[in-house]
Length: 169
Image (cartoon, rainbow, N blue to C red; front, side):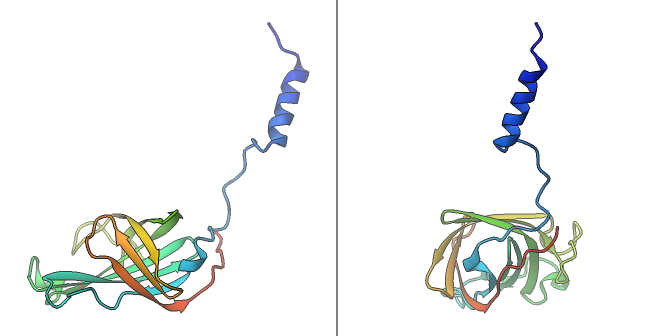
């Protein structure tokens, strides 16, 4: 049972007209969330002097990408001092994000301060970083990020506003 050529041609033309045809991936990065664009800094955590360990965050959002700096402080020494440097150390993460409703999904990789990928092993974490944050805007320049894997929310203030200029991929 053969179908006429006109049937196939009509079907293909209809799918193309409705937008079901293939298209290449976008050649520019996404715009991300306008309200997040810029650099956000956490200055302190509640009762930080009483905590044995805590971290402070600095997050830069650029279009649909982020660069995160985590400064950690510990009163106990759980590893070699060459890594912890008397209870103070910094980790870096770069990657992408998207938001659905009030949930921000960030996914990236641990890296060095110069954005180069951090090799496996060595001091602290390496590999993939993934976190879900519930975002609560407390004004134009104050945001609270409540992480799914942390009890202490990140209250960050805007220190520099930027606008998204998508870059080629």
